[in-house]
Image (cartoon, rainbow over all chains, first blue to last red; front, side):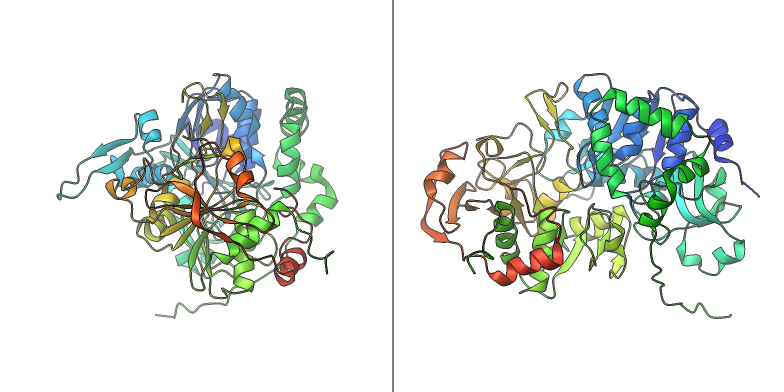
Length: 300
Length: 259
């Protein structure tokens, strides 16, 4: 089934006010284009779950999309504080729910596997367990020590950016694969954005690289450069200058609002955004190829 | 010679942390100063160090200075890249990591770490910090942990506001009772010297860097810091170590400049 849709339509059809959203990607392949589209369409009261809220959720919180965040590390990766989420939490204007990275990914793993919860070994650091009633303990039914449990996370929508997908949503991704697969299987709906749309034959040429099968995907959107200022391995580099720049922008509500006006509300789509970044940025983020050795699946 | 041997507090900590690593260690690396320490060790006495990054990269050999934990330079040329569940379950929880690096806003008398909040009420934080990330599990499951932090009184309170990751908890036997497999924070590397746990799990001053005094360490610690009977002095930084840091690892001084 051909699931190709423009990103704006995919968001319009599949993301509702109040939804729990998981925009996947551990530093890599962060779906910024979809985040910006959600801001443009002025979705409200979202529950935004991500191990690392990163700039994408900082911007969505700034734009008033969120009621609650669920996270395990709230920082600007490699830079410092994630100012907007942090300020809203400190001011009591944003609800939050917190886990360790392992707790967060275990929630998704349970959701992806259709289990009610996942067990983890206790770490001795029990303050978070006391602070978050979702973190509990059960006896090992096989007679061992108690284990810590976290409940399944089943987002209404997962948004996953990939290097390439076919029109059915069968997706290849490589590089840091964080929690993309788990988020996709855990969610009720999956929106894919892809750097490239390729023929099904390209997918079938390397089936081990297919982490997400098309039949769990609701919409496939062709959005080159969708993860800037994050990156897509082999396609373009992480824009560290922007991550540093956001540290400054996010110091002042006026600067944030003029950023959103210019770079989110002020552009029609990701293509316009990318062109607006200009040739110098494009050149700075270019990467030289480094190809893997071809493998032989064999003709059977 | 004297000119080339000038160094910053950050360099002092990085070199001393690097020296704690053993050849063949599998080490869970953090970005920033721990990354420099590991890469320095790999280029000097520990060529067989296996660097694992929390983003799921195993055996990374970064060609440039990684600026975030998910920098693409970590991936290209690595031994393996796995998902987040695998890295925390199969590698860390299962016990396949020798060394973890940790940091935090506060480290207390028993080596417990706070990276979550400043204040006494979780629901109304005075200052909200980033939170655990991977550190809760690294502290519990790595065979041994090292902490790198500047020696300042506010960073070393008697008791942390929130235990994000476990050191020796309430002291002797705390880790065993909690069922933790690792040996915990076996050294805290500061810009004054090294703190190490005594037999009760309390961090004591075990070594000073050349030219630093026990008085400075005591003054900059939030509990009555004990000085080990056999107080050591760390070896001076060598020109080779500094040259590798300056010329190969962090040529623009992003992580070398500060404390």
